[in-house]
Amino acid sequence: MVIVRDSGGQGAPVGLETQEMLYMSKNAVKPAFEAGEAVKEAVTRLTAYRELAQFSSDDIKGAWGLACSFDIYECNAETIRDAEAIKRFVHELCDLIEMKRFGECVVVNFGEDERVAGFSMTQLIETSLISAHFANASNTTYLDVFSCKPYDPAVVEEFAVSFFGGSRCTTHVNLRR
Image (cartoon, rainbow, N blue to C red):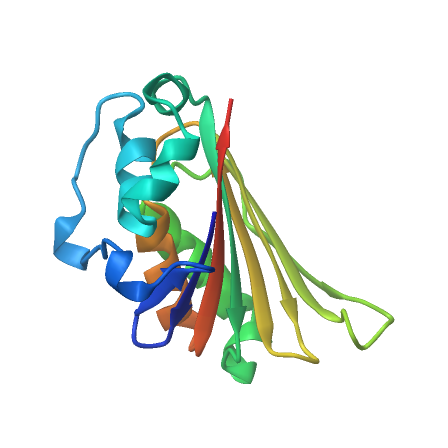
């Protein structure tokens, strides 16, 4: 599934009309889910009901984890070039989605090719990993969150776009089985 959102939070899956969408509001986030329910809830909020047809109830309930990628475009150049800001983002994101950090956040600036030069970040969490690359040339953030503990991709998307000052975001949602 691919979701594209603009800076105002409006979004639609590629190839579907906006009026067929079920949008998620910040207030609609459930604070706790039974096993398997978070994945089902996140998928429901992020895409049209007919898209759910690709997942059976058993697939959703039996998902081992959720892997999402967030491509955030036209980010604030100063923020994505600031290692301390990136570490603060990780700390705040982990608190927001209730993920326990394991070890320190690693942020490294590298890349001989200007097209890919920028900071890369990794943060182990007890239920897997959060990572990102920040491309200086395009001011784009490529964020990945993988966890076997349920989390809401819409919350991650909204927070990351706001934190990095992006103008739009493409989100990919993948059930890990």
